[in-house]
Length: 455
Image 1 (cartoon, rainbow, N blue to C red):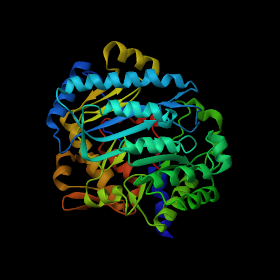
Image 2: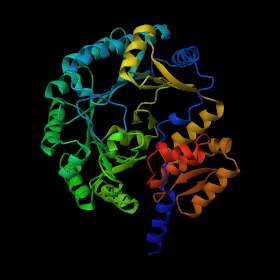
Image 3: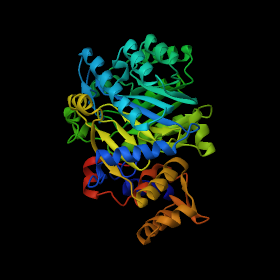
C-alpha cells in the first residue's frame, strides 16, 4: 500500500512539462545569436570530413503533406488535396540535396534514410521512386543500410510498399494512434482495423523486416476499456516495435486541438493508468521497454541495439544507426551536424522560394558549445541506456544536480553506482525528468507553453 502511495506521489510530482529530448539543446532553447548560413556550411563540412565510409551519414526527408488534418497532431504539416504540389516540392528537395552534395566535395555514403511527414504516402509511388532514385544517384549506399518510411494505413498501397522495398526500404511505421471509433472521430483520423491489417500483411508479404506502429495515450474520450481494446487488436498483428506516446495538448500552438474540450481528456491520474495498461499488455506479450515511450520484440533490431549498447536517439527518434551527420531535407526539416543544428523554413511556399534562389532554406540554428556537447552525451546515455558513466558524470556534475539526484535516489528513481548513475525499473517512467536535471538551457516559463507533460 505504501509503495502504491509513493508511486502516486512521484507521478504527481514529476508530471510537469518536459521536452522529449530528441536533441539537446531542444529547439525552443537554441541560441541563434552567432548562427549564420556560412557557419552552418563550415560545421557541416567539418562533420562530413570527419565521417568515414564505415559510418556514413543519415538523410531525413520531410514530406509534410496530408489530405486532412488529424486534430491531435502537433507536427508541421500542410493540409491539401492538390497533388500537383508533389512535383515542385520534389524538385526543391533535389536542389537542396545538390547544394549539400557540392558542399561535401566528395561522394557521400548514405547509411540511413527516413521519409517522415505529414504523410509520405501522400506522394504517388511513381514520384517517390523519382525522389529516391535521384537522391541516391551518384552516392555510395552503405552495406548496412536502414531505409524506413512512415505510412498511413488508409493510403499506403501495395504499389507504395513494393516500390519502396525495391529501392532498399525494409522498415515501415504506421501511424495508428487509437482504434476506438469515437476517439477516431474526435481526432479526425478514421482508419478501420481492417485497413491497418491489410497494410501490415502486405508489407510482410513483400519482405519488410520491421513493421512498427505509433500509438498515443491521453487522447480525448480514451478510457481503460478503449485503450485495452486497441492494444488487444494491435497485438493480433504482432508489430515488431511500437511507440506509445503521451498526447501533447497544446491548443495555443495547434488550433486543431481546440475541437474538443479539456474535460474530454483523461485526467492526469487516468492518463498514467492508460499508459500502465498499455505497458502491462505489451510486456506480457513479449515486448521490452526501449528507452522513452518505445517497445520492441526481442527479434527486432531496436532491441538488439539496446542490449548491445548501440541505441541512438535523434530527430527521427530511436535508431539503431549512430551517424555524426544527419541532413534534413524539406520544409521545417532539422539537420544535426554534431557541432550544431539547423532548421529549414517551415512554410512550404517559403521553402520552395528559398531553394529556388539559394539552394538551401535555413530558418534558424544553434552552434554547440563544449558544455552543450557534454550535456547532450549525458542525455543520450540516460535516454538510450538508462545510465551515465562515472567519467562523464564527473565532468558535468554541480551542486544543484547532485542535490536533485540524491533526492531521486531517496525516491527510488535511480542510484549511484561506481561514480555514475543507474536508473531503476521504478524510475523508467521518469527518464525525461532525469534528463531535465542536466538541461541548463531550459526556460521553465517557455516549457509550460512548449512541451507535453512528462507523465
